[in-house]
Amino acid sequence: MSIIYPVILSGGSGTRLWPVSRELYPKQLLALAGDKTMLQDTALRFLGSERFAAPIIICNTEHRFIVAEQLRGIGVVPSDIILEPEGRNTAPAAALAAMKVAERDLDGLVLLLASDHVVRDVEELLNSVAVGETAAMGGRLVTFGIHPHRAEPGYGHIKMGEEINDAPGCHVVDRFVEKPDFETAKIYTASGKYLWNASLFLFRPDAFLKELHELAADIESACRAALIGAKRDLDFLRPDVTAFRAAPSISIDYAVMEKTDKAAVVPVDPGWTDVGSWAALWEVMDRDVNGNALVGDVVLHDVRNSLIRSGSRLVTAVGVENLIVAETSDAVLVAGMSHAQDVKTLVELLKVSRRGEATAHGLVHRPWGIFEGIDLGETHQVKRITVKPGASLSLQSHARRSEHWVVISGTAKVTRGKDLDNLEVVYLSQNQSIDIPLGWVHRLENSGDDPLVIIEVQSGDYLGEDDILRYEDIYGRR
Image 1: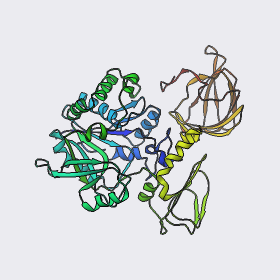
Image 2: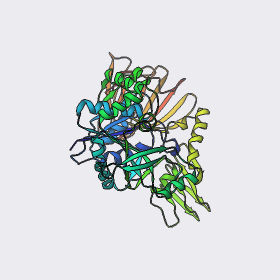
Image 3: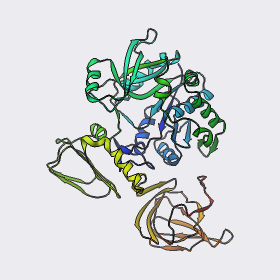
Image 4: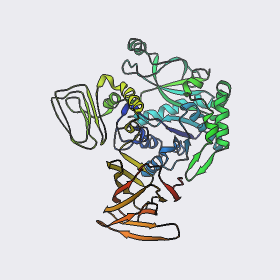
C-alpha cells in the first residue's frame, strides 16, 4: 500500500467572510467552525494513521510564521512548508506538490486538498480516499464529489460516468460543469448523476506531471525552474520568485482535470461544506431555537435565522431575521443572508477606496506575538504589544520616530543604545517604563514565562511599519 502525502493549500484570502477574514489573516487561520482553526482541523484529519505522511503545506509567504505556529500548537510537524511568492491559483501549487513528493517517494500518492473546508465525518472521508486509491495507483487523476443535499448554484458540479471496472466505487468523469443557475442546479440534484466539486484530488505524482506536461507545459516548466532555484529559509522552502511568476494563474480544474481523459471521481458524503461565505458558515454552526448562530457578547430580542458575531464589544439586535452581523475592533458588517456572496464586492469597493480595513486587521500577528493599534494621529501612534514567552523582536532602529514603552504585565528585557557599539541591557517589570530616542538601536525581548504586554507610544513625522532598519532577526526578516 502506498504512502499518501496530504498537501494542504492555504493560500486563499476568504474575502466573503470579511471583516473577520482578511487578506493578511484569512479564514483558514481562524477558528470559525470550532475550537481549532480550519487549517488545524484539516491537518489533524490525517494525524496518527500510518497510511499518511506528515503534511506538506503550501501557503503565502506573509502567513508563514502563523502557519508554523498553528501546526506546532497541535503537535503536527509538517514534511515541508512551501512559500508561494504570490498566489497563482491551484494548478502551479499542485505542480510544486507533485514534484516535491516525486523527489521523496516515487510510489507515493498526493492528496491535494484545501485548508478551509469543514468535514464532519472524517472516517467517511478517509474511507473514500481508500476507494480512490486503486484508481490513482492505476494512473487515474481522482477527484472526490459530494452527494448534493440541495440545489446549490454556488458550487461547480461533476457529472458521473460509468463505474470503472477495476476500481469499484470510482467512476469515470463524464464532464465538469461550471456553477449552474438555480433551476439548472435543481435538475442536476434530482438526476442523481451530478456531484458537487469539492476540489479534493488524489494522484500519483508522475501521472499528474505527465498530464501537466501534455496539457499545460508552461506551468510544468515554470514550477520546475522555481524548485531548482528554491532556497531554504529556516523551516520554509522558498521557490524562485521570477521562475514561479512565469506560471499562469489557473486552477487545476481548468489546466488539467477538464482536459484529461484520466479523470475519475469518487462520490462521498462526509458532511462537507466549503465555508465560502457567512451563509455557508451559518449552516454548519450550532444554532439556538430561533435559528440564530451566535458568537461573542450578543444580546437579542425577536431575532430569527441570523448569524450575529461580536469580536470586541456588545452587539445587540431587535426584530430582524435572515441577517448577518459581524463585528471586529475596526469594522462592522451588516448584510442580508441572501446577499452573503456580495461581501466580496464590498471588499473590492474598500480596496478601491484604499481602505486598510480591506486587507488587514487592527490586530496584527508577528512571529514574536501580536500588536494592536489603540490611537493614531498625524505625529503619534499608540500600540498594545504582546510578546510570547521567550520571543524577541529584531535588533532595529527607526529613522523618523522615537518610542516610549510602559510594561503592563510580564518582564521585559530591553537592549538599547546610540549605536551597535554602545548598547545597554535593562530589565523592566510591571509599571516601569523606558524611552527609545530617535535613531537608537533597540530590541525588546520577553525574558519571562508569561506573555509580556507593553504599551508603546510612537512619536515622529512618519509612523509607517517600513521605517525599520534591522541588524539582527532570529526570523530571517530584512
